[in-house]
Image (cartoon, rainbow, N blue to C red; front, top):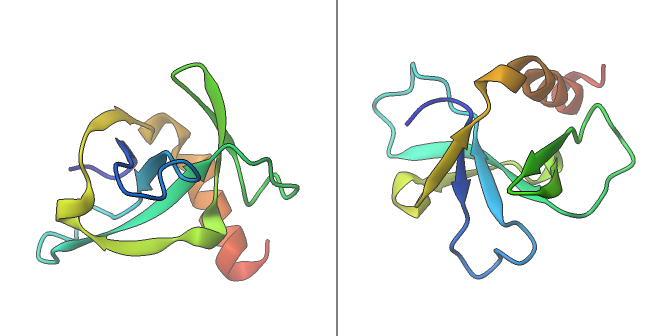
Length: 100
């Protein structure tokens, strides 16, 4: 597991949130939980808070306000890693917490 790994969401809410983006830093090696931000296909009006991603031909948005901690066992199939989008992802998290 690595920071910014993207997982398919196999839970019952996968029609709303088809993917989960793991944002947990590698320093967290003890916890049995990961912090994730779900991705959804509903466009949000705050671009800095909800960056978009093209995944398997579909435009999805980081639903930053729906951030959650979940057990590692709930993360199933890893399909990608978005380390190359680090700045946008961290900026969205900073915007959520700091408002800028």
